[in-house]
Length: 253
Image (cartoon, rainbow, N blue to C red; front, side, top):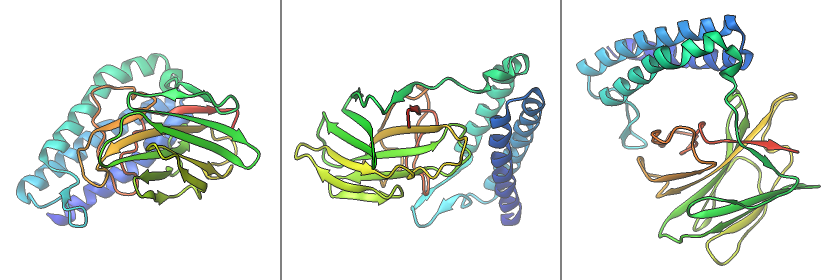
């Protein structure tokens, strides 16, 4: 049973990488292959669901002391994939160019403030990198803020820096010149090549706030606002609460 579950997980990983690569192509042929992958993913997840029914301990991650998947989450994934087949792919097959969902743009040459519900931030392109500032508009006992960079098509590895009340908690951007502002906010300098993108990649960027960020199922506020309001961000290893459905296209970078 464990071997069957492992095979299912490996198959899912392969399909995810293949799906994203095809999505970046955006041709009619790519859309057809993506549809085949979604159908295969439904089958794989049903196989994984059968494994979990026989061994409920599958999906438990001992380090996090939590289940990374269980019967309920697998069923939700199947429902989401089936919705893709019925609601999304009919339109994509007619208009494959729509695969590139429009993203809001942030002009880092202007560096204007972007306001969210409980915080606001700005980022200005400078000679030595990106000058990022954040103001916390609603203090709380244990907030954390993350700044995430990734390519628009989500093929490259996500790189982010997370700041909590004690300072920089995780840094994969090589942050310089970090300072608190004394009011629950902070400023920092991000090196110009921190995102680690490839030539031709379109840079994307987001900021998000999480309360008690080391625990699962915590409130998460994204800037920009996420594309799908019913999406519930979850804690993921190496990604934290990063939400691929909440990104700015970074202009003049």
